[in-house]
Amino acid sequence: MSTTPLLKVENLKKYFPVKKGMFGKTVGYVKAVDDVSFFVNEGETLGIVGESGCGKSTTGRVLMRLLEPTDGEIEFDGKNLASLSQEEMRKTRRDIQMVFQDPYASLNPRHTIGKILEEPLIVHGISDPQERKKKVREFLEIVGLNEYHAKRYPHQFSGGQRQRIGIARALMTNPKLIIADEPVSALDVSIQAQVLNLMQDLQKEFNLTYIFIAHDLGVVRHISDRVAVMYLGKMVEVADSEQLYEKPLHPYTQALLSAVPVPDPDFQKEQIIIEGDIPNPADPPTGCTFHTRCPFKMDICTKVTPQLTEQTTGHSVACHLHVGQVDNDIKQLEGSL
Amino acid sequence: MSELTPKIDGLAEAEIDRTIGPWREAWRSFRKSKVAVAGMIIILFFVLLAIFGPFIAKEGINEQLAADRLQPPSAEYWLGTDDFGRDILSRIIHGARISLSVGFLSVIASVVVGSFLGIIAGYYGRWTDTIISRIFDIMLAFPSILLAIAIVSVLGPGLENALIAIAIINVPNFGRLIRSKVLSIKEDEYIMAAKAIGMKDARILFSHILPNSMAPVIVQGTLAIATAILEAAALGFLGLGAQAPQPEWGKMLADSKSYLQSAPWTMLFPGLAIMLTVLGFNLMGDGLRDALDPKMKN
Image 1 (cartoon, rainbow over the protein chains, first blue to last red):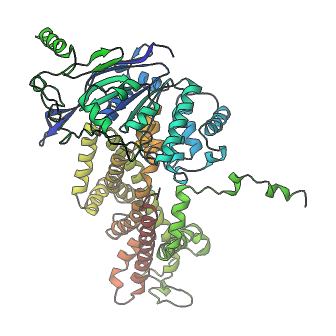
Image 2 (cartoon, each protein chain N blue to C red; image 1 turned 30 degrees about the horizontal axis):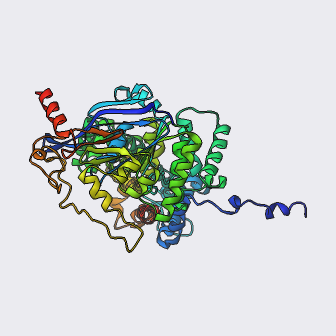
């Protein structure tokens, strides 16, 4: 595994304006993604987790410029995606593909599977019709379907099969990075494992890099090398998968992990229940956005926003509870004054 | 013979398994509705009449026999004759061609223009949408027949101009229909997926959004043909549509209104023809709605 980041995101922001009244005056912003920075190395899988509404799907879509970023840089393969023109971005999508959450909605019901799979090739002008048909058959086999499935329509397949088709479609253009937006959350547990294993096999075979967005920590642990935890548009903790699951630092991560079911009826574990709902992202709490629900809240938490700071190698957390954090934050604050 | 049969045994699963496309599935459920099929048969009857009518009723539609004026239906004149001694049956048969082509052509024109404007308004939103939608609103603020009359008065009376007027007044209906459909479809994940693949807008619009928004347009289109035929007849009746010798149904009604008491068949049969055609389209439209509307059941 090489260590050059394939994708490097810096201070990415996506604010949705909140409009009110007859003339659509902007009265505020929903900070769906608020100052997020991370990187993904070539060949690895970065898992992004968080509860619904935390901005993880928005992050994925902003990376592909399906939504325009409000601010920030997205450096992919030496190019800043955020500053590309629409047409350049369209061409770059050949290298970044996406797998969607709902396999029932992400395939055009009026197109046959063959047409759905061939389309990425046509769009990017790859090879001639015969080659394309051959490639469609080949990829159907790769994802575990049969070549005669090419003649069928999406409604003739099960959810798991459709998701395989969705994955095949993402692979057609031979991309470097695949953003998988909750690719298994709509599937049965037994099918989830199949699809996850398929994705892992494909990763080895085609040297793919994944950004794997999910709310299911078990699923993310299974597939990710590194995991980023998001809360209310911010990243609160980033670490190697093992480290995050063994030694979570952020209270939010700890609470999330304690909610993962363990397949052992006798196992008694300490449940950390966080109370209340996710705050309104249009009006986020001051300081640390988690302080309204945090069991370890301190005074500083309501005033100063903690920055993502590296604690041990590769393990960063944004929480005042941790060593050096407070100093660092105060330094940041002074620097900005 | 024996050399030919093994092929059938060797058929791949793919060939035995007949693929059912979304349109074929719709046809299957359409076929189940007897009323809709009845409507379709009525339409087919008139369509055949429009195509082959002139060959069936060879005797001139404008042949005037002064001696046979206002004859009641008889063995010679099945539907009687009008005030100029013209055979009403032949005129109705020829009129089918006029009414149906006005119906079809005007609706096709409004569907094409309306779809184009609607899809642009729905997909691009913002000011494009505002402008197009407001124009539609303005057009819809007029009673449609009044607007048609106004347009014909500007263009001058005549069948072609009536057709154009009817096409124009129907544009906003289709435009709004498509726009609302596009608004919902463009949020669907497969459109997001199409963008993610790297498709150009034109391809997304015409290869993905348009085919998926066609179902309500087909239903509305079928019903609109009925209305268009009625509107053409109304314009004909008012003297703004088809001109004198043309055997247009509405015009025939207008010409015979003074004979309503003495020779009711002169009005009855063109009226019946209009009613049957409109009924046929309405029945079929309803059937289509049932077949296409509950969307694809996954």
